[in-house]
Length: 170
Image (cartoon, rainbow, N blue to C red):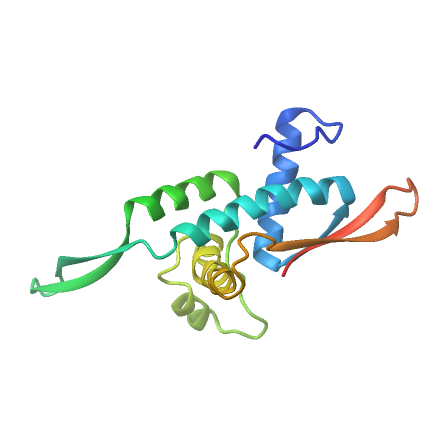
C-alpha cells in the first residue's frame, strides 16, 4: 500500500489505518476522517474499484457433478471467476479487511442465515456485484474511468484543529 503520505505513523500502523478506512468506505459508502487520511484512502479505493471495473465480466461456466444425500449424482452448471477476475479478487482481498454481513433490525435468524448462506466474503461481492457494474456503465456512457470517490472538506476539528473531511463513493 505505497503511494501516500506517511501520516506521522509507523508503516504497520499507517497501513492498518488506511486498510480499515478503505474497508469502511467500500462497505458503508462514506467515512469522516482527516483530510490527509481521506486523500490516502481515496487513492487506494480508486485503484480497488478500477481493478474491479476492468475485470468483473471475466466469468467461466463449468459443469460439475453433484452428489446429493441419497447418492444420486446430477450435473450442475456453475459460474466461476475467470483468471483475471480471480487474480483481481485475491488482490482486493489482500488490500481490505473481511467485513461481515450484519443482521437487519427485527430480522429472524433463519432469514439472516438463508440470505447470507452462499456469501463467504460480502465486501468483495459488493465490490464486484454493485460497484463494478455501476461504474462500468458510467465509464461507457461518459467515457470517464476514475473519479469514483469524492472528498469534501468540513472545516477544522475541535480540540486539535485538524482539517476534517468526508470521503464518499459517488
